[in-house]
Every structure is written in structure tokens, then in C-alpha cells.
Length: 366
Ligand code: PMP
Image (cartoon, rainbow, N blue to C red; front, side, top):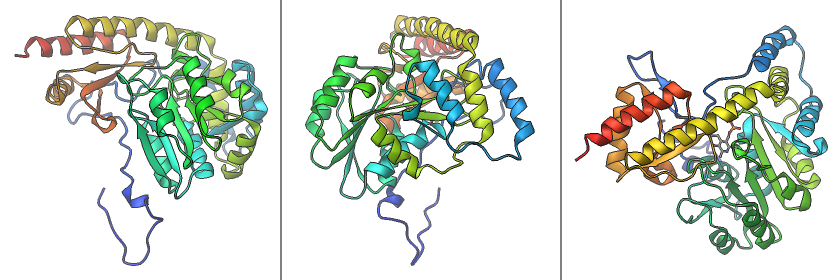
């Protein structure tokens, strides 16, 4: 986007330094048989119950939505075994991340995250006027010692995604608890659980939130529930944090359609189970295929795998080969991983196509 500097009207310091977030590409010129594997979307789309709720919600569009989201929060509380009074819903978990930065960080404050962490932490920190700080990772995995070493009296927020995007790695709950224990008293730890459901047996950090007053969890309907286009996310935290975030939240930040469809999706056990089972099956299959042709992957706990190539040039060339075949995956240079490609786990036919094209590409490598 072209930068237009006005002679007199200027935004807050730091805003013009924000690099725009690039979403996953979805089109290739001249092709209509494209498979999009660049945004970690559920290949099965929304479930039947969500689709039906979407059709029903159209009849009530003249009505303002609920301001307190009580029905969706109650459903989330029942589904995940949480106190509905300490849930806040937003336009994607992006909005919760933004509320957290606006509420807790400003000029002179630091927002800490791990090296290959989700780009919105940096963007939202800068939008709030705070300074983003990245702590190094070990083997593409968050490093609690490095995060603790980087935390100081200016640190107001610490973000880690568990499992992380784009690496797919995660750290055990004991390590997360050690991080929460070791942070300075004024710092709030945010556990981003956008992919939590895909990690079998993991509660996204909900139990830790209940035990402490300095931990918040963010979650989303965009991944497992197949509703990335609907924009519904939520946060769960101590009462003092939720009360603060609600002051920033617009009274009608979610439409009645968003609220109703998300609630219906929570009740669609068949769709949830199918999505989880197929993701686990094809994730194992694709990782094994990639490993067999000499591409390293870390064990992924999400709905994607990160394939590592010899170098950035090889990753780039493989990306071109995939595009030539109508397959769009994600280049992750902006995450500091130019030698890797992040591939969303599609349905079986998409995974087979990806494996086939990458195998042919590697075969032809000198
Ligand atoms: N956190 C992580 C780690 C993500 O990968 C994403 C989506 N790419 C989000 C948060 C935001 O998702 P949404 O706003 O759709 O809930």
C-alpha cells in the first residue's frame, strides 16, 4: 500500500511503522481449480448446524444483537467447563488480542512474544504505542528461559501461542506454569489457543487461568469450527481482566448472525469429531510423506505442517511449483522462516496433490 503522509494530520507515533498483515493468498490468475492451504482453514468448511443457523439468522437482521453475549458465553462455559462470567467474545481472537494490547500496553511499555510468534502480537502492540520485543526460540519452539530473561519492569504482556503458528510446536503445561510463575508482577501472560482443540488432551491453559490471576487464554471459531469468515473469537481470564476488556469492547461488536452461528457450531459434535479425526490422520500422513522425501518437519499439534527446505531459494522454488499446480500454501519469511513452507492440512485429495507435487519437485533437485 502506498504511504501517504499528510502535511499536518498525523497518526499516533509508531502507527506508520506497522507492516500490514498479509492474509493467505486465495487466488491464482487464470485458474479456477485452486486449493487454498494458506490460512489454516478447516477443509470441510462449517458444519451443517452452523450452516442452518446462518440461514435462520437472516430473518432477524433488523434486530440489534445481544450486548452481553450471554447465550454464547453460557454455551462456551458448558462446552469447555468454564465460568461463563469470565468469558469475553470478540470479532475473531484478533480482537481480543487487540483489546489486551490497548488495555495493558502503551508508550514506554513492552509486549513480549516468542521469535516465530503470530504476527498480530507485534501489530497490536505497535497499534497501542507499545514496543514489541521478540525472545529467541530453541528449535522453533518457545523457550521459557529466554522469555523470562527478556521480561523486565516495562513488560506488560507476554504472548505465546500453544500450539504455535506457523511452527506447529507447543510447550508442556509445566513450562507454561513456570513462565506464569517467573514473570514480573505487572506482566499478564496470554495463552493463545487458536489451535488448542487440535492438541489432544490440552485444555488451552484453562486450568492455569483458573489457578492464577495473571493468565488469560484466547480461543477462536476460525480453525476447528470452520468459521474463519464469520469472525468469532473469545477470551477467558481472571475477573479483573475481563472487566477491563469489556470496557473497551463495543456493545455490538458481534452481530446476531455471528453469535447464533458460533453457538450452533459448538453443538455440532459430528462435525467437530470428523474434523479432528481427519486432521490427525492426514497430518500424520503428510508429515511422513514429506520426511520420506528428505524434508524435515517438527511434530505439529495444529492443522498444518511446516516443511523445511535446504534454503530460502529451494522453498521459494517449491512454492512456485505448487502454485503452477493450483496449490496455494504459505511462505513464512515474515515469521523469520524463509526456508520453510507452512501447509494447511486439507482433505485427503488436497494432501495427496501436495505430496505428489513436492515429491516431483524434490526428485528434480540437483
Ligand atoms: N492466533 C493465532 C496463533 C493464529 O494463527 C490466528 C489466525 N491465523 C489467530 C490467533 C487469529 O485468529 P482469529 O482472529 O480468526 O480468531
